[in-house]
Structure formats: structure tokens, C-alpha cells
Length: 543
Image (tube, rainbow, N blue to C red; front, side):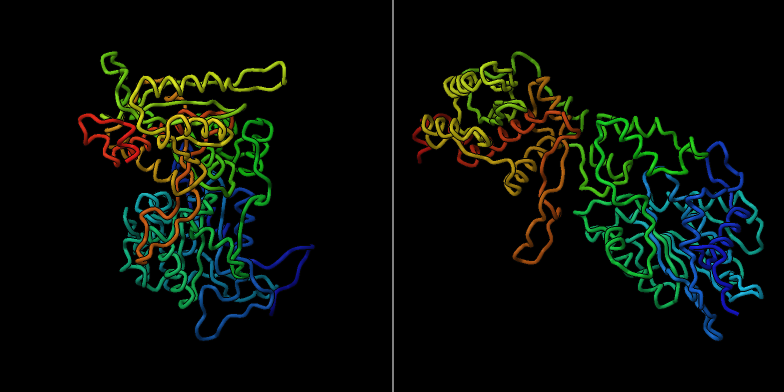
């Protein structure tokens, strides 16, 4: 007989109740103070399973070739939640259920209730881009089985790198993009962990597509567990979410809420409650709201990371521009090594009218050391009622730098300083170069030069407190996608780099000025600045 029909509005047939009951009866908590106790599902997890294993009311069992996805509304699912919600253990529990539990539709009983049964020859693969990532799910799965009621199942061989299933040739095994030889096996279920990291550049996207094609042929099913993704990376998670496939269930918690103001504690805490749901300790779970909030305010954590991993917001990712320890190690404060009048330098200028700082840095041509020449902050002007930079003082400092040192070039961002850039270009012809920092290609090249030198320890600085603070406030974000090369080959990085603030309200002007000064040094060296023992600067530059 078919399904009995709904007994209340909104009810639908599902194997989720049976799968959830099987999990709670056979799976144990893999770690923490409750390790070894029954793995009990939260309300959110129950809801997830009910939808994932939803059945068509008219589902039938094929009499000859029944397949795992027969009768199911969804053959695939994506669970997107913030860090520490419990995605990986739930995916591990699902993998266990697909090895032993009632995940395959087997018809309706005499009361019109669905009946589930185990898959005939289950073969489960757990996929990620690296072994470390597969460990996030395979390690708890190993403990769930080895320390739970199923540990003594005859024929079950629970290994630390793969699990041999009884009664046939089935396995539970981790796979990565590097292990392509194992991607053609007749799998019946695939668990994809951290699909926000699976991209075309690392082979992860191709792996996911190949496995899903394989599952289609077998009639198997799959589930993804992911954090919010970086939309510039075109990850497997993004492809799944934007694919509009009616056979894929997307479980995203309040996905359409606007970005939260990270400086608004009330708003951030409310977002934590929405996104973490039943996993919060205040609701019977394990996540402490205060701990998550503290991480959202940590200076060392970039804003992009906070938004994707804690606020569950799809946003472009960022990473620290400099390693703090390496930056500190490259400081040189010996008075004997400081900049002296007459030395050849290149200058970097980043200006502001009223909001940020205005900075001038010099980079010594002989060794690439960065020196701070001036930093200016807005002061309140009573006549205009506005905050302004003392532009005359800035002009005087720039002039003094050209008079005191052999300045080959000044690279400056002309934004809101165009008039002075023109004046300086008139005073020192061919030595003042406009360098708009919002031009992706040019800024990417300047950042790459600066960061490579810092990594190679060939770039040093004078230990300026402002420059150090601004460097540590800076993050690298992805700009526009690079155009394809004419020869068809791939760039090692597919996007231009741009520099952004880690947090709103933090200043990065000093770092930008230093990057411009180092770029100007590169131009001077290209023009022969280090190849001449002495030269007439005006004549050589005109030439």
C-alpha cells in the first residue's frame, strides 16, 4: 500500500526517523567529556535527517534492481553551519548509518508507514582536499564505531586509515584529490567535508564532480558539510548551493540575513544564537556563546575569516598581510644603520584628507630598508567644523625629503591629493609617479614584490610603531580575477591581491605607504640606480 497520508499539516514521509533512531542506538560521542556516551541528536540534526531522507508519497521499490536513492526526494544534501556546530560528527554518523543502518527505502508497511533497510553492498567514501581535512570526519567516525556497540560486529575491521565492512566487499574509506585511483569504485554514499575548500585550482572541484557522476550511475547518495564559502574561489560548495538542483536539499540556517556589524555586540550575539542554534550550551549543546563572541573580536583574526567561519556569511576571504613574528624580526633599530642625508632612496606616499592617516616612507636603495619620514592625523578645524590633515606640513616634509636625500622616485596614491601630486611633479620632473592603489594589477605587483622580499628576509624596516601597527592591521583580500594568459597556461594565483583592514576602524595607511616606497625602489633599480657609482640624478632620470 502507499503512504498513509499526513496526520498533521506539513507532514511528509521520511526514513529520517528510522535513521536518527539507529544513530542514537548505535553511535557514541567520539571525544570530549562525554566520550563513549550515546550520540544524541539535537532538534536541528533531527530536522536535517527528516528532510535528507524525505520520500515521495508514491515511492515504489524496483523489483529487480533496487538502488539506494530509490524513492528519495533528495539524492544529495548540503549542510552549511558555522565552526564547531558539529557538522563533521553528524556527517560521520551518517556515514556509519549508510554502512549499517536503514537508509534505503524498502516499501510501506501495512499501516502505510515507510520501511528502511541497509544497503546491500555499502561502499562509503569520505572526501576532502587533504588527509588532514578527511581526518576531521574520519577520526570521529573511527571512534564512533570502535568505541560503540558496533565494535564487535563479526567481520568488521575498524582500521585507522580505512574500515572494512562485513558481508561483502564494502568499505568506509577517506579519499583526497591526490588519490584519483580510488575515485572509480562502486560507492553507494559519499560524504564531502569542507567543500568550501574544494576548488578547481587544487583538484577538489574535479574530484567532487567525478564522485557525484559515479554515484549517479550506481544510484547512490551524497552529503556535504561545509562552512560558508569565499565566492571568488568558485568552490564545490558554491556550485552545489547555486546549482538549483531539485534533487539536492540545502540546509542553511537563515541564509538571507544581512551582514552583521561586528562592532555591535548585541547584533553579533543575536547572530551567534541564530547560526549556532541548538549547539549552544544555553540550549543544551556544547558551544559557549561567550567564547564565540570573543573570537569575533580577536584582533589577530581577519574580518573575512570571522564572517565565514563564525557568522556563517558568504564573503570574500582574507588572510594576514604579514606574519607578526617575522615582521618584528625584520626590525632594525641600531642608530648606526639609520638613514643618512645624501643616501639614495625611493619614497612612498599615501594621503588622506580627513578620515585616515597620511604617511610618507622612504626605502633605501642600497638595502631595501623602510624608514618612516612622516605620519599625520586629522585635526579638528574650528573654521570649517571638519577634521583635516595639515597639508602644508605634509608638503614641507615631502620637500625636505627631496632636499635631504637622493630621491629617485616618489610613488603616491593621488586620491584627494591630486593638486599636490601635480605640484610635486612640477618641482621634481620625472620623479613623481601617480600610483592609484585601487588599480588591481599594479597594486598586486607591488604587494607581491614587498611580501616576497619580506618572506626572503631581504626587506627590513626601522621598527616604527605606526608602521608595525598598520602592517599587523592589514589583510590580503582577493580582487578581480586575472585575465587568462595568451598561451592558455594558468596563473599560480587566479586573483589579484588587494590590501584591506582586518577590522573596521583599524588603520593600514603606513603599510600601504611602505609598499609604495618599496615598489618605487624596484623601479629605481630597474632604471640603473645601483649600477652607477655616482651620477647626476637629473640627467640620468631625464635619459
